[in-house]
Length: 159
Ligand SMILES: [Zn+2]
View 1 (tube, rainbow, N blue to C red):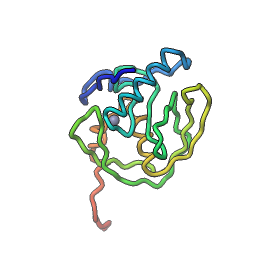
View 2 (view 1 turned 120 degrees about the horizontal axis):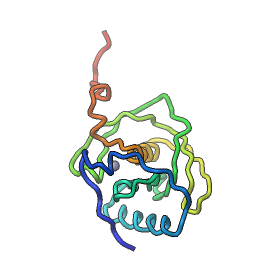
View 3 (view 1 turned 45 degrees about the vertical axis):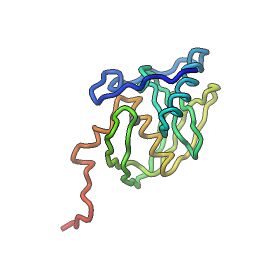
View 4 (view 1 turned 120 degrees about the vertical axis):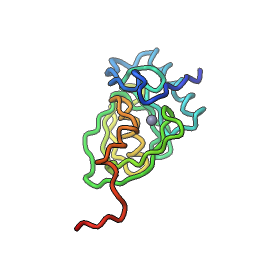
């Protein structure tokens, strides 16, 4: 197993590209997943998406209920209307913290590393982490949330 180098930078083309659907859970994919597990552990991350280690695939790892979980071809099938705002960081954008509004709960469908279909309802930190990693699979980075419509002023009264 090996720790893989992390792709960095808001303008990095591999981080800006939508990942391709994983066609099958092959031996090579399983090896990649092992190396991603090793890498996220070494970096002490809450998750890691394949584009972050230079593989443009719909594949990510995310800490779900304290367990590092592999999500292949994930799809969000439901989002709560209720959102909350938390600061997030990213291994690909060291030193940056961005307050991001996201739905507090989601349902996500995916294949696990054995290729079996899974569906999970997630809340709070797990839901946020999966949404952050899935952003990576679509070429979205934290800096994209710096747009004004996500900057909700605190304590602002509606007149
Ligand atoms: Zn990230």
